[in-house]
Image (cartoon, rainbow over all chains, first blue to last red):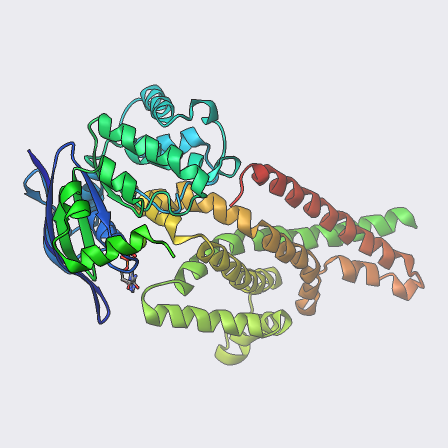
Length: 246
Length: 213
Ligand SMILES: Nc1ncnc2c1ncn2[C@@H]1O[C@H](COP(=O)(O)OP(=O)(O)O)[C@@H](O)[C@H]1O
Ligand SMILES: [Mg+2]
């Protein structure tokens, strides 16, 4: 069943067009990997989906419903369909791992305090941090911080969980633990959009891969289609570059 | 002689404390209002506020006090207001402007990502300010605020220019009796009080040291 549809999304900043009409759709439980060189508009796309930016044109539909962005309250409600894991975590420094996860459900009065706490503990367990629930962000490694951020993003049960280069700010030896958690979420049936430079990961975890270039979807298909027999020469050039980092 | 001098200084110190405490009570919230004005997205309000802050911070507090006390009478023939009112008005506005800039620096130093993390989680602007940003701002402005507040302790002595009988005036009144030690005694009051404030701020800083950022 189609969960998300993005239709002709356009976004510019001043005179530069960053997204030039992006269209795709995603089914419940699918994982979409977005690859593309820096500056191609990947972050902007995720920010539009999470309503940190307002698209200039185009529509976002969840479960067939167009998301309206007239009032502040509508925008806040729209955001609840999506979760976003940032490249640089953005944890709240004054709260423990558990408090980071439970803050939003508490503010939004999602449940009784004990139930919110229990769910927070369960989420931290899921990302392998049950021994760090009372640690403050500065006491955690980058990989652990990012896993807390993932648990926090899941605390409100978003329908689509978005990741913006979740391992780009990490030391290479810490990327594995974060990628493993994301992979486990796919097994759990979560719908996800992952912007990543980890090609092997994208290939193995994604159901659909999008290659973005210069604000448009240059190529879209299954991992086999995009990675093994790309149609566009731009995709081929990008993939060749990605394999040879020097 | 010690007892009468002490009594005299205490009465001056009471006046000093009154100016100090009431100035803080008024200027801390007023500073927040000015701060929001100086960060407003409405450009005329922003420039007006910043211009006002420039005038207040750029001219002597003593001059501001004299103008506030004598100005209304000389310019508009209004009856003069009580000395303490004029003093508090001048001090509160002056310190609110300094505080507003400290607040602004603190607020603007919080990374945009903190707001965005709150927004993505469906929190309202108010929730984000009070539950995410505020404590981080307080932590960042503790040191500059303590500086400014300790300066206020000493600035209160300026109030004598419009006739507030504060502690230095009280200590000075013994000069005509040939006594210098009451002035040193006066200094001890200041040192004790600013020492106390330093301790309190140190305590606050330690209390907020449980997190970084
Ligand atoms: N807030 C902004 N203001 C102006 N230009 C921006 C802004 N955000 C992004 N851009 C520009 O949009 C383009 C795409 O950026 P981004 O979406 O971050 O790309 P990616 O995540 O693929 O590297 C870049 O050229 C960037 O400079
Ligand atoms: Mg990016």
